[in-house]
Length: 279
Image (cartoon, rainbow, N blue to C red; front, side):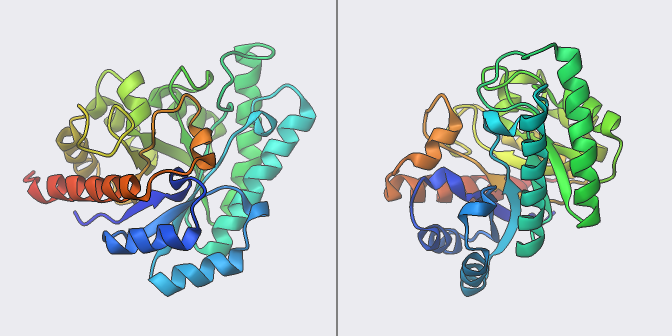
C-alpha cells in the first residue's frame, strides 16, 4: 500500500504559510491540510503557493469554537455552525480538497446546554443539511470523535458511526484520530474495523500528541489494520505541543527546529512501518 502523506498546517502556529510548505516539500510530504478559516485566507494566493511547491490541499480541518456548535439548542448558533461548514466545503472545492472535518460539539463543551438526547438530534439535523450541501460539491464530511476532556457529544468511533448512520448521507463519513483513540478506545484494531466502511480520513499523533514514534502507540498494529480494511486516503500528521486547548497551538510561535524534527520524525516512522508490513 502506497499512502500519501500530509500535515495539518495550523499546528505550526503563526508561521508563514510558505515556510510550512517548504518544510513539507523538504521532508517528502504530498500535501497539506488547512485550517477551516476561509474568511481569513486569500485562496488564490494559497493555490498559487501550493502549485509552486507541487503540493495538494488534501483536506480542511474545521475549527469548532463555541459559536460553531452544530448541536446547539440556540438556533442562531446552530445556523452559524451549518453555514460555517458550508463555507469550509466551498473552500475545499476551490482548493481541490476532498474532505472537511466536522466535530458535532465544540472544543471546550463538557456537557449539554439542554439535554444529550436533544443535542444529538440537533447534530443529526445540522449534519443532514451540511451533508446535502457537501454532496452537491462532491466533498466528504468526516465526523471526528474527540476525547472526553475536549468535548462531550461524540468521543468514540462507535458513536461517530451511529451519528453517520442516523444522518444517512453518502457524503457524511468518519475520520479516525490516533491521539483521541489512545484515550477513548480499548483496541485500535477493533475500533477501526468497526468503522471500516465509513473511514474517510486519518490523523496521526502518538499517545503524547507528539510525533509518531516518540510515545507508546503501536503504529504497526494500526497500519496493518488500515491495510486490511483497505483504507486508501491520506495519512495526515497532527502532532502538537502540550496544551490543554489544541486551538491555542495556532496562536503560538513554535521553534522551527522542533517543527522540522517532528515533521521528519512522523513521516520517517510511519513510512518505515508501512514498508515493513507483510500481510
